[in-house]
Image (cartoon, rainbow, N blue to C red; front, side):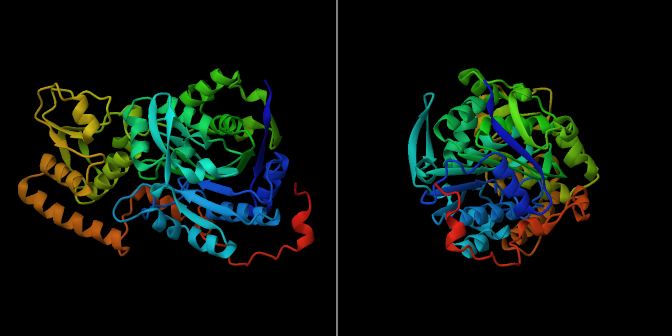
Length: 454
């Protein structure tokens, strides 16, 4: 079965490159100007982190809203539900990327998908809450980033719709240990009418920038068929689509091919020239601990049961901890998280992190520090690290300084900086991609609004 066409455009000026990408795939073929349009970007973190490769660029979002305005659409919403911690929520994530100003300029609504309202939906026997805004829209535009993921290998159009779940349902996707299957089923319920993969930047060892590394790519991938877009995106990242669980399940269920040769490519047709060889599974010791001179601490790969809330909380706590403990050896300590890892009893210093890890090791006699929660609190996480790895006097000093800095992050007067982030000061990375353009949109006259409209 031949897939719908997918356009690949090398980006120069965002609006005109986007215009070309949407035109090549006839992306607005099913759009009526009276439709309720919902644009779902990937703005998963409101934290003050380098946004490259983890967040949909504001320039691409603004271009989409302008194209919709040209089509005469006036009922437009931008919707996301980010990971909440340190006082950062979806509202602050919108402000961080000036999406709030974008919505105000063009008269679009902003929706926090974490707040609902929700409708309960049964996905293969697992009851989850999906935001009504996503279920009831007439035209869903899915705008993920071109990035890898340490659990699902890629995070593109299929996985981006996970942001339409309630916070508890996002965690449930992981707790059931059926993450790939549930992502596939979610995309049977939520259908993307247009997918635009923002490849301004791409991310290696994703899904975030603490362990991941962003690269400039300057690509837009667009199509009416989210499956075909994801196959193209995975291929360009250098990851075999057949190794992505939810894509494989969708292909089997719908008689689709995972071979990119089955997809009609428009625009940049030489896939081999665009293909990268990016790693998807980050090594915490290599990416985070070793640059700080820390040895003797490991985090075994948790599998697909580690959810983004635990992942984010632990990541922030580790950044705060290593900032005060560089060039130290902690012997043979380990942190176990997610619901798949079994504690290795020979280790003397271990943390069972989160309710899933604790439950999975409940029958084992262990002397671990148990950090309860779904997710655990940031302060509890930091306290457990200090208690396990430091002497009491040093633990008290480190906790005091780290908590003070975290408070500073929360109120916006302090930012953590990792050595690896120095690369984002080069000319390859442009903060203006995450800001509203300075020029006002041109007025669309009534005649041009109606050209080509259904």
